[in-house]
Length: 332
Image (spheres, rainbow, N blue to C red):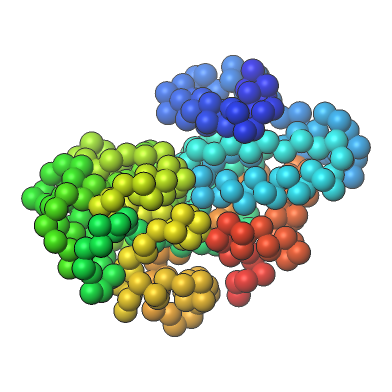
């Protein structure tokens, strides 16, 4: 059943992502055997990539992070052009779902825009992360009304207050009347967060010192949206909305970037982000950067390794650039 749902990526990826999320969050270990019987991997670990390419039944299923999704999708389309008989299907959900579904064997390759967490490794000790690139998280807002802001920069403490303050923060409701650290006129500003276990959200929470479980809870009453694209689209279309997205989505949707602990918003340009990723001196905070990982359960099968190698190939760096990310060739 699951494999049939994967066959039409464009039409069913949200359904697949929802099903996997339900499996991970609700079904539990008791149902894993039954589910895996329906969602078994047709790719033999012993098959060579060359042999696999000759088979019309070879499929690679990739699921997880909405951040990794755009580049995974672009890479999959290019990979299939040069690997006849291989079908690569990509589903977008969240980093947590990507890691868990890889650990449960529900996908061939999981996707996460963060490292595997210790508790995940404790549950699935055979998980392996394969870094294919890197990116960064930025605060963004829609300032169409033209409020005067002399400095588009917030401190980490300002961002923490925006979400966690019980008087004029998202703990008090979905909207706030002022934005900490920004010279805005009093008004109504909608605060946005992510739904569920998001690598983008985890990166922000880690940087500002807010427990991600608290951010995911109903205590933080910000507007919940599922995925980078949904957040970016909402903020782009709603004046006075503020939230966080991956750097590439901010660029794609033309959102106003607010620097976090930067000298100014211009610090969040690609050169400074790469410098921060590489551990070099940069006005962009290194704590707001993160890896783009493909996740496998144990050593990758031959065909999965073939795709991972393809994703790391310097000749495919343009797909990362197109998505606003940074390929391994861009990094130290």
